Length: 339
Ligand code: GLY
Image (cartoon, rainbow, N blue to C red):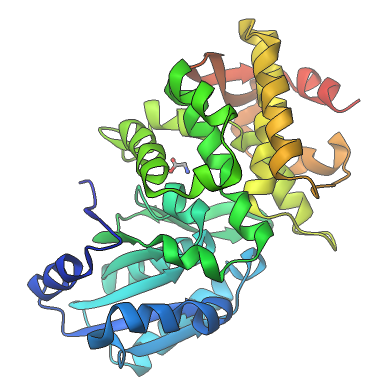
């Protein structure tokens, strides 16, 4: 079922929706960062929820793990959460992933509402019901499908973000435009920074994601197209998390997109100008991004799925607006990208 989305200005509607759920308790889940920077805005937008109990977890993807889940479950016990408790996940993609996962299995599943505070979480992570934590170095290795009861998108949260976190959301918007159509792609490549932040573009980007999620919530077919850029992107991100300079998800994805578009050229004759334009977007919006790695660094993360013995399954682009999923890519073709 698709989660209702409430936008800035629809606070009263969200409160009415919340009241209809007849929750026994509402608990706020935030990380140390969003607790400091985003909760004040949340309280001013929703004064009636100001005094809700709060669970605060450490920030950052390195904390998206089972130990932090354990902490959330302990705190839910302390707060005597029951099956009619609703948790509001206030934060970026890490927070909605781990918060959604913790809720989805606590007492066999309690409801949660995602309140994304980053561009990336607004256009991607908060929506679609994928929850998860990282495990043994692998991204989102443990998780569930459990859609948020609702989502609330409020661009004022962008004022709380540093530049690096803010602009990393552009990667998923770029992917959505590639999966959409020529018009959306042409628009996006001419965007200036602030164009990405308009509520109109956020809605548009989310609408593209919705088309892939609708009818394939459990990721068995067309939704896998949303994985464009993520096979290599996740491997690069996982490796980076083990180094002294971890990448943000969006930073790894813009790199993954570029390399998977290069593979799309080999496998589907995708015109080379598309990867070139994606590279220009990377240079324009991720100017500080410098991350050195070799194929051998990312290979263990790419090859961890033993089912990948015939090659590595990826989603590749045939042309703008036409992605094929489940394409078997030979390892030597990937290796050649990095030599
Ligand atoms: N972020 C990709 C998906 O939701 O399927």
